[in-house]
Length: 271
Image 1 (cartoon, rainbow, N blue to C red):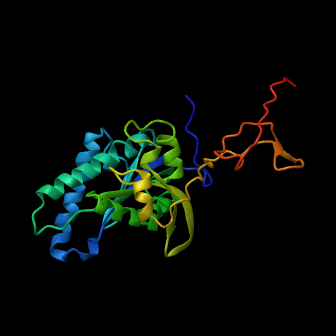
Image 2 (cartoon, rainbow, N blue to C red):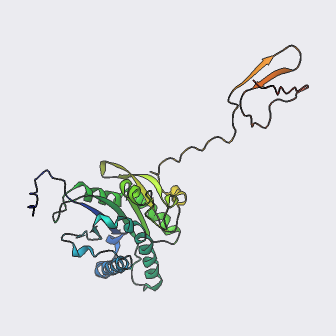
């Protein structure tokens, strides 16, 4: 049997999938109700993970990192697609159900989430992957997308790193979500001026174009081709008199060629 390789300081750590969640306005909840609200969020997340047949992050050493008003959950990278679909949609649905049953004295629960994948050492959580995950979570685009969720009766907005989007949605591994459910944007964080990364914003129940008006860092939409085709090769040879000779060597689709044509001769000879 081959002996296991000895880990060197410059070795790349194993890749992990990361999901971060954060409660909106947690600091505004009365202190006496903070613990109960956080417990409700933990119960909702645990229930949804089980529904999606996802492993319990707390079974992985260092797989659960509490952040006070949220948490960072670590998963094997093989389940990455399920962290996008169905997890995000079911998490929003669970928050909707909670709202319908919520006591008037309990705070509203709205969440921001982010999904990323990358190398990360455990159990110390050292690596860019966890930093990028939290910055995607805190990005201006993700915060603004939560306003779109509010206006549509939803309770969740999520930011996916570009690599997550490419490996899951673009690769066709999400059954109920397609590219039109995502908005291409740039993730920026106000107090992290050196951070700027492409991302995809998702609000369950909305398409990307529906979220666009809310997000100032949305990528510019691709310019649509002009609806009026121009002649690919046309020449006009003026002659004496009021008319002229028009020679078109390509398809012409313009509605009007000239104000008036007195005499029209079509030359059907093959060149």
